[in-house]
Length: 111
Image (tube, rainbow, N blue to C red; front, side, top):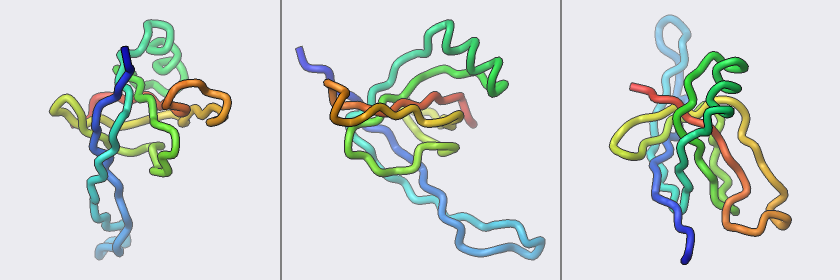
């Protein structure tokens, strides 16, 4: 049996200028990332996220090896909903991890 992830949409925000109040204006670009593992967070991870970040973690995303996108404080879409990543991306040494994923990040519901 082969483990296979899902395709998620990563929303990349690029600053394109400033408005009249000097606040940044962003352009959103959707990036399709294949083979992302999506798993519900454990009770322990949910409690740690709540204590450290004050956020309710719902899923952990396993990021495939070789991916160079920015996942910290980003928005992602999967399961027909929009989510926001939070916390640090936890990264293993790519050559030392036996499967196809070496990074993970938690997401909270965002709409």
